[in-house]
Length: 235
Image (cartoon, rainbow, N blue to C red; front, side, top):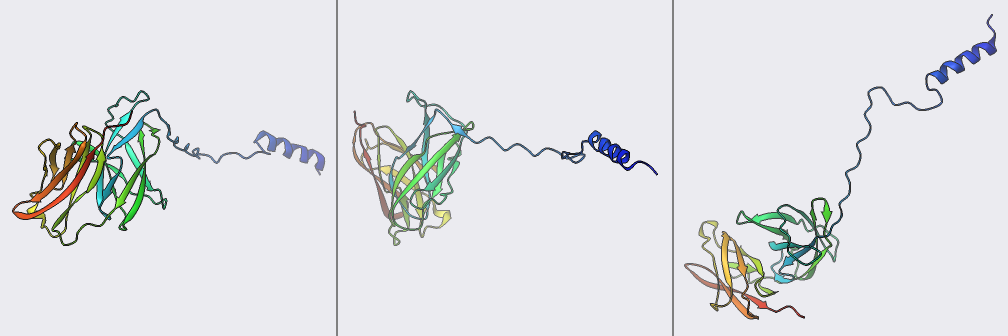
């Protein structure tokens, strides 16, 4: 009969030789993928136009974004992603980058169906770097349901020469009858360019003042207005 002590020493030596005492990976197992790196704060600042507005509730809106460097100079950015939450509730606003007129990048989102004040907090990501959040105060005001169409925003304040978007909400207008036009009542009240059936790009004049834009859909006689106040930036 073999010596039991000798047999125990032999088994212990074999266990150590095979890596006993530690856990070994299963043959063919792949290491877990490393988590994606989180976006880091960047040096670009996000600026939106208009910085505040009175809008229709429950409707898709579009704001024009620009990006500025630390020196305040505008930096061209071709691609970016965007996220936004409603500050009062913390709910996702479903914001996304889209192209108005097929060429102009805008930040699109849908407003809540309720009326009253609401604040949108927007953050953009450019090349893996985040901008600081931008707060956009909004006033959600219901339009006249008896009108065949409405325009949003209906009231904005912008800097001289700034550009912004206006969107049309058809109420009783058939999709085959979209002949909308947006025109300043004052010839010096800026310019509006139609970019889609229901989207316009407006550029404010360089002279401060309050200007009225008229939305029409010929041959319908209805006229819907929006008010733009051009305010020179403070010192």
